[in-house]
Structure formats: C-alpha cells, structure tokens
Length: 306
Image (cartoon, rainbow, N blue to C red; front, top):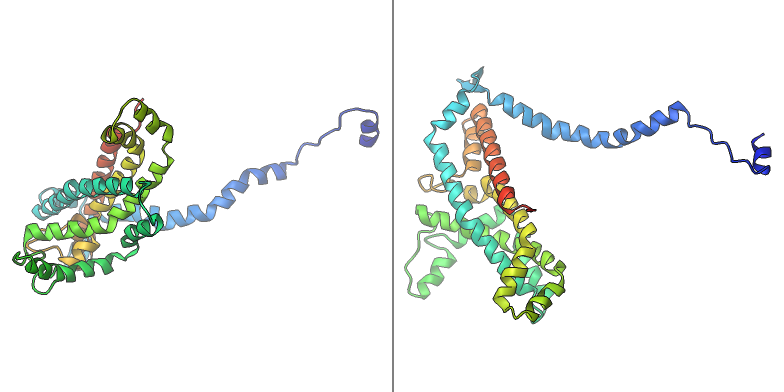
C-alpha cells in the first residue's frame, strides 16, 4: 500500500518510533556519563562529605567523639592557625603579584619579533614547570644551604657575607618565594604568550597611527587584552598558594619558629602527625571558604564588566 502511494505521488508515511526506542534514546546520555559520575561521586563528593562529617568529631585518647562545632571554635582561638594563615597571606600578597608581573614581562619579550631561537628559549623558560615539586624543593634547599650552598659561595666571591636563607624567619620566606617564582613564572608566561599571539594586530596598528608609544600600546592594548588570562592565572595562583605544602615542607619543615608554616602544612601536621583528623578537616573547610571568598572578590574586580 505504501509503495502504491509513493508511486501515485503521495507523501510517504513515516512510522513513529516505538516506545522502547524512544526510551532508550533518552537514557543513552545518562548511560554514557554514568561511569564519570560514579567516579566523581566516589572520589570527590564522598571524600568532601566525609571530611565535613569528620570535622564534627574530636579525638580524645585515640577515640573520636561527636563535638559539633567545637573544632571550628577551636580554629578561631588557635594562634598557630592564624600564624599559618598570615604566613600564607604574605606569600600570596608579595610573591604572586611579583611572579605574575615577571611572567607578563617575559611573555612580551618572548613575543618580540627581534628574538631569535624562540622555540628553544620558550622551552627553556617552561622547563622548570616540568620539574617535580619535591625535586626542585630539595634543589633549592641544597643551593640555599647557609653553610655549604652554592648561592652563599657566589655571594662570598662578591664580598657579601653568608645569608641565613633557611635559618632566619624573613630569609626563609624569601627562599620559599624564590623557589615558587622560579618554578611557576615560565608556566604563566607561556599562558600570557598564547593570549598575546591571539590579540589582533590591527589594535596595535591603530594605536601606532594615533601616535601611541611603546608604553602606551602596552598599557592600553596589551594589558586589556591580557585581562582574561590575568584573572585565570591569578585565581589559579591564589588557590595554589593557599594550598602550599611541598616547598615549605621540603625546604624548611615550616620553620624556623613556624615562620614558613602554611595552612597546607598545618593541616598535614594535625592530620598525619597528631592524627587529629577532625581538626584537620575543620582547617580544610576553613581553607575552602577562604579560597571561595577570594575567588569571588577576584572575579568581582577583574571579571568581565558590561
């Protein structure tokens, strides 16, 4: 009958898909995403929820007892927590802006048409990022050793006395900041370089026609063009700094006199040295809240504006 209708010029009759096929088509996306969702729930959501549950318990004599918000009240009155937060804040406020400023300058230099062997030089600046955290932390601990380090030996040749890099509070912070800057500046510079190469050349040509000099082009064309990636790197650097653990653990163990004790290191000490997992979980949630607040502030002031 359908064939006769088609021969007669009538429109073909399309059969509606069966209910089973229609149901299978609706379930297909969920079936494909189910493995990823299950892994996310098992390795992300469950640990997050369990950590919050642990933060409501305290450890007494190896036994855990329900304490409600006692760990959070203890957190507010803990001077070592505030000291660790202050040390982390100093690194965040001093080292991160310096590192990002150096990365922007390095990216502009690497984008220069006058630079030769660009690929080799860019690879050289990116290579520190490939180095493992523990490996480069040990490297800097050896280089900055106050007694036998190469840095103090070179300073001695210049007539400068030995610097107590790892044994003085101020210089220990400087040492950690130098290590972080060496490791992450090239990485951020590569991100900025990718953005610079995507900026339209017409903007620079128009600015040059209007009589803008090199500094004015950098200020009014380059920096506004870099704004999205500056926000990205700032947020990533903030999160990484607030979670800082490997470098101070390897280089200074939080010393001297807790001058390089960071929030990540303090969390580790409570959880895996003193086995006070409830208090460590409370520190982790406090850290999460701090990261969230700073992220919102950064998006507020550097995000896209109408």
